[in-house]
Length: 487
Image 1 (cartoon, one colour):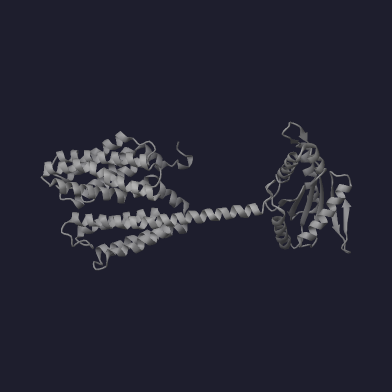
Image 2: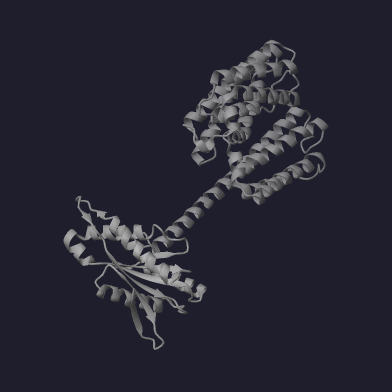
């Protein structure tokens, strides 16, 4: 089933017209590869067309197998007709390529599934095996065609086919799979503007370095390209590595057209292309293990960070009610009182009336339900700046910054009325009406939480003495004695 988050016009268009996308892409890549790396008779030394089609089919949830393969066969035939003299060869070569694409795609979907081809060592070896096994199947048919129609040596053609197609699948398929799965688009959406600029800058650095090495600095070792590629790998991960290798491939394939490049010593363009593709294979699969290791380390670090947050949350949370516990609330209250300089802040101490009677009559489980019920109702109408905690036993504390005495009294009254209108339904079907007493303390310049909590507790005690189900306001007298005023 398609996730709603994956619903994008571009993706929907590709899903609907994958045959057109595959055919167009196959024709362009086939024509370019034959033109650049073949003399019109021998087998092309670089073959990325199959990899692109495999990436398209393997990334689709329900690909139009028949339509895509038929249109790609037509595209392959047209590309061959434009670059070769024989009429029979295009159809035969195209058939061999479609067999390879079909086999490789089926094996990828069966053996690897939705996993990245480089997600683990086992998956990586499966991908390598598929990359070499399927060109052997198609290579027998392709080499026979080359021998029969062009009098090319069978063994040499078979070896050339297997090497070019295997390297093409192994080097280019990871990129096209990531592209058609939408991984590049998703990655860019998740990045900030600064991160996108960094991505563009790193890939541009790779292109510039490749252009200098292939077109100008002939004496500089080609392995210098490992530097920007590794930098891309470290900063951008596997997706960046695949993109960097693709960009290097484009620059490298263009170099023989101008008879330049670090491989210009090779006698033919196809030989240069084959050496380039081998280099790209080494570059890709020496960088990707680094990317995989960095990805695993990042995942472990993120998991440890998440676990640390969870432990920190547990250490600051009351396990029964999910509210702040006493140490966390004390720390928070001290910080808030210091910020408000003890002005316009009220603290309410809340206690469940006759809580022992609830436990004795209905059991401790009912007592726990009562505490959770009170926590839920008391916390349902709080502002973002307010803080509620289970201070201990059946006592709760509510800190209200920027609140007047009149507002605090209204909150106490509303809490009692809400509890009266919302009795607790116990597991045995009976109902329990919860009543609370409240003690209100006003900061009045007090910046230390223990002093304010002491006032709230004295006011709460007075409310209990007054018959419960009410609230009292504590006043801090000049002689440092606590006094409760009836409200």
